[in-house]
Length: 202
Length: 282
Image (cartoon, rainbow over all chains, first blue to last red):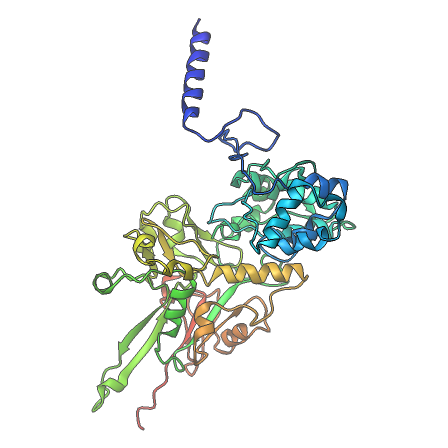
């Protein structure tokens, strides 16, 4: 009897808080919850063009960094400018009449930037360096690019519009920084990520 | 810090700091130890460093009234002193002393923080984590240099009326009410330089990165660098002045100008000042 009462109370408390919260789903992929159980998938983002990542990254096998050029050079990975899209698509006649491509060319003809929205958005007080992660795991350890980006971004190559799949919380970052990673693909020497507050918090 | 890390490096963490050899390239404890040397003979007290710091570190301008109450948020300030017995021209006895966080090795502020918002980094910096700070102000009370500044008001809402918010530095948080802050040796620049250096498989070169105050100083009175590297300019200056980071009482020639402020309190500061020399007979 007491168990049922407790269970009932648990559901009352658990779901009463949900009424005001952001879209909240129990479960989700592994690593998508923060330590306090918050589902970090975030709100569904409506992008101006439903960009098919699977077409580009999976079907065509394009390297993520062909478009996200900042990832190996600096703090932000960069959402590409429209001329990057047009650079290829002006010579791909076969898809020219697809609705998404028409929309792309509408922005191009009207000389307007595409108002993409940020999906993997960190708080303002966090400094995340894409360059160090890409240099370390992609260039030094020679791991496949979809794996390296996927540590934080999930399997984007099988998504249409990008969705946040990892918690991007501090405990989740630290869980990886704690691990001993090999320094490059030939040596067995390992080191872990930095722990200092000031490395990430600004 | 994980438990494994703590256990593996137990002998390192239980050491009393600073211990001799802590900042030694051969010992591999730390690759960097940021330090400064400040020549008061060259300093003209022009306040360019303070202005540069305001611009770089998103410091709010508090206004005349609050300034008079001592609420100014200058992370680096020019202290003004008057030498006595200057005879006919007392105004010629002014001397200036730029005072910023000394990044003490054994910092008095760190031990008293109830929430661990301020602690020591591997680079020998005294870090301040604004989002952990609860504003007890104990650190400020315990700081012998009085270089910690508290946000008594919600400055972000008043200090930068539109469109001034566009000039804020995005590499740095804009601190809100109830948070302690202090000079960081422009850690955002240091971090960027360190990342760049790591990508290129090297250490940060001497002079590659400087804080805003050093960059702005028109007379080059401030020297900044990595004291672990014995070839860096700042390490040479410390050595020439016979100032030792690990000592609380320097044994040096009386002709040497170098000193550290309030050394006898044993905070082991990272900033060396060089005394002003006056020619009294001229």
